[in-house]
Image 1 (tube, helix red, strand yellow):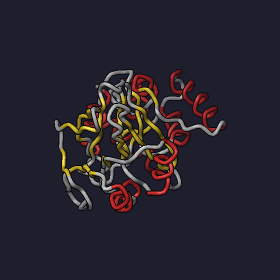
Image 2 (cartoon, helix red, strand yellow):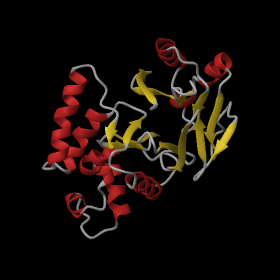
Image 3 (tube, rainbow, N blue to C red):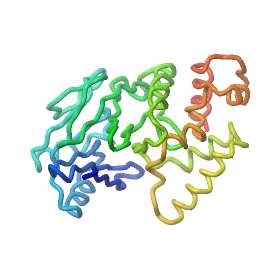
Image 4 (cartoon, rainbow, N blue to C red):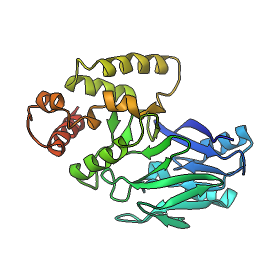
Length: 255
């Protein structure tokens, strides 16, 4: 029996996500931007929450955890604290650890940059990556606590995953990300195709996530800092990928 995944809106532009193991009935929420939409999704499906998998400490990913833990008595798995404590954690994990949700197994990938402790969860058999605010559809997270070099290394780590990996990120930012990316790569055919697709999805009231990692590799400028054409487009031909990424990220910050 294959895992079931549900994605739903939270707050202004966050995503909530549930992953469910039909064999054992175990269900995990990946982060909790707010409790009510998670509870509503669980009740729609007839599922009971067994786990919460936390990616990083920001409030828009954690502020509903205490309510869900009190309601369901679920286990909370979180990264090791670096700057800001993550409350209510039962289990702490780091690079190389695995997390089980019933019979489902996720690898923990440390992906710092947005925050220092940020982790992502890769369910290999399910071809599903939950990467919160490290990698977005046609974007990446703002570098807040880490360095651009750290963020670039984290993106390279995620980019190395199989092309058929479905990317579940933490926010619905795709249209804005596309608008920016086209300022760097206006002639990128994959990016232009994604622009049409994303506009249609949003017009129909559908999320633009998940997206396939193989498509992101072609269209997401933040994964393409080591492509010579991208370096040339930002006036950094011949420079390191980390330098190119830093410039692209700075341009996005000001966009």
